[in-house]
Length: 376
Image 1 (tube, rainbow, N blue to C red):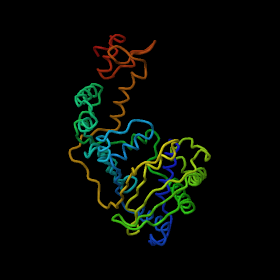
Image 2 (image 1 turned 90 degrees about the vertical axis):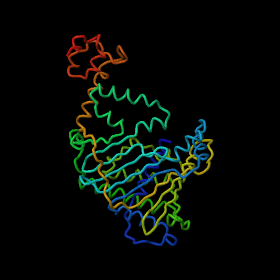
Image 3 (image 1 turned 45 degrees about the vertical axis):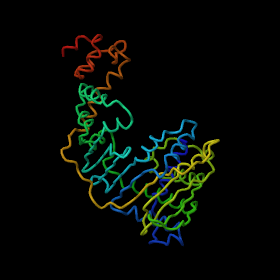
Image 4 (image 1 turned 60 degrees about the vertical axis):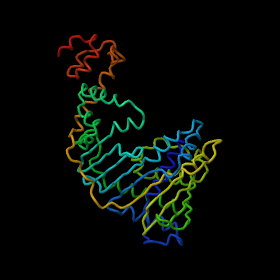
């Protein structure tokens, strides 16, 4: 299945391709040209909103969950999954980029991330998540106390459901060698990679018209995995942009299943409005598994021409402060094993002066080994 994940990612890259100059082919008469043209127009949008959810039933999800030999998912948990979704908005690039992601779990918006003017805004309904998954909400108070003792005061407002604004993340990334802005050469290489994969889509994909419904003209797409994978790896090997894709060591072509994957794409007004991929078909890649009822991942797409709203009264914290606090809390753990009171103890020859300036909660863990630090 790990190999399959890389293949699906390759297919996703193909679906994002856009290198055709056509202007709205008829989806019924020329389904493949209509597919590519629709993705081209979608990619030219100023902004894009995407909502990913499940198109399934509790019974089909439960059945899919048991294909690997485990117990079927409880109906209550399957319903929570059906009531969950991921919503994303992306607009612009570089310093002007805007982004928003909302994670809805069991019908509640539990995690929200926003990026506006290079500031990251985070809000988490920690109590709601704990209740949804049956965790002890009392542990949240304990976590707040421990975090505050370790010098991470920003954890409390986060766990209390307040907005937290993280500033300076771009400067911190620059300190670690991250490029401030993508070079023109890198952009050209990535565009070439997209064009190569578009050509592979033309050569290998089978696209058919399946009629029209409320979401638009439905096109069924079939991709032969081995052929697409070969085109994908060849394009990577010949393109400098390959360094931007963290795939690790890709398997040889002979290890790729000689199978076909299928998905549906809906097109309206020469743009893509919806995609659906049935997870149940993946059962054919598992020995002895049978393909069950439909459990589709549904991706709804739309243009976004507004602006991501900036939260009011956010608690501000710098990325440098977060990095230093986490580093300070982790430092003793990298110096030795478990110590008294459930903390960490220094190994042989440990120099207690290394703990100078550490948070009191950390110093307390080394009361026996470094008594001279207890009164600092």
